[in-house]
Image (tube, helix red, strand yellow):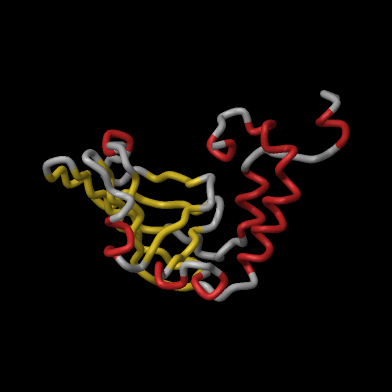
Length: 156
């Protein structure tokens, strides 16, 4: 996706939408909860114990491992993520039984341990990092390097 591009200038056309979505998420109460996210490929080599990373995308997760099972294939990665600022959206979804929780854009995470490699399933344990002063996501937004100023768009 576009949110993962190294060239942050590609986000300029999306900045208004991302800001709107980010603002809406901030209005929802934050949950401290353990979440599951499954992807249909092995990315375990990208996650090493004590690594710190920032997820520059909105991540859809579930509090139910049963829901996540359907997203796992023959070779998969299962993330167990301890979050402090998850945003429950099940009441706004057509699939309320999925217990969906969004991890906001710019969430900082630490890899708790190296991946558990079990046959064709890799399990990665992540924990959300929160600053002492609990900075808002707008600071993460600023760190993305995207701006909508006319001067920047014109290369000045």
